[in-house]
Length: 566
Image (tube, rainbow, N blue to C red; front, side):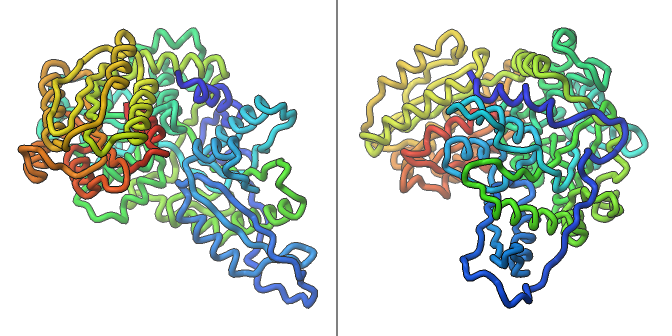
């Protein structure tokens, strides 16, 4: 399970190193560049503009969209007079890498959030179709942002911030104590609620797990596979505070700001996202905690691909645009958006300051990425210690699902099961005009065949009792949550139409889903052309989950993406 994602852990080591001070990674000395004006040469080429396509990590979308527009307005040209036109596309770093590998994207430049994805792309490229050379050089960093623990300011202050260094042991001091935040004089805050992305999907999640392991080992370098069994109890204690995992660091940032401290006490984010949060209207501020045990940089490399579709003219255009991005005005604009500039000649200043919840003098300690064998062992240790899930899959089998919609939905549900862990508990609940008795909970590793057989055996008929089914599933999990809190509890609802047969109305359903945040989350999937999106969004918001929209072509991937939350 997760075979393709395992590759990344053996490759991150080639891209990051250990430093003991807030120094910039190698290769970040300023590169020449200029804001060119319209080319005055009378001999500009009659050829159409050379298209420079860039596929980049969405974390820097605002900055790159601005700079692409500004560069194109300069009418820059190659040495032969041919005009340069830059076209950018934002994507998740892993998704971008997969698109290059399957041929659906053929960019000239690949700029993910982390150099780990450049190395991963190289390895995957060379392992298929008899490619003998790498496709992606390491590239130069464009901007920098350290990985931090974002925490609500009053909670950080209760732990001693900013006078006292805070780390993973302080997280444990809250999460281990039966009084939760009451141990620090604030019982009204409840328990410690932590969020970080799934390490097998996300760079920040992988580095979170590694940082926690280092903290457990009480070292900053030299972590080995042999040492990991000894730190698993520490890792398990930290993971027990998790509300749920996820695929996107930005998701946690957005939802944390939207829902406040009752949803998450803290989340592992990038520093620039903490700074960005100050643009939102809210009553509480976030602050960045740089774990005293150490952390990592996100380096945003600019890699010009060595591929058959990349010509010498493309390379010249890419070098010109790189010079533009690394020039002082563009780097200063990146800093205004919360990134650290890579040009050491630029003094770090606002908004990288206390007024925006961050500290320009941090991080003081950077952790070392261990070798591939240790990283493989790290993910195995994380799977042993991750917080297990208890999921109710609510499946619409109404008459409108007949034919291919039902077939693809069944495949999607089975893909969802395939991505969960063997320790996870799963319950199936089918509905049409009737909400049928639930099957489960069963442990996935022991009952996967039974679950798949149940899914395969359903047929489509009848109306849609969506609201009744959603509340029934939530109530099942709420009863189980009170018996044992040490699981991620979530309802995943898939439906293709409006409710027609429930005894509950939407307002009553939404009201019934409101409860203690961090208890039971509700995720909804709107399937097909008319999924009643407004109602499903309201249900997901009330249930502190998320809404996704899919069709017969995308439903399998949507189910797989949802599995990243568990």
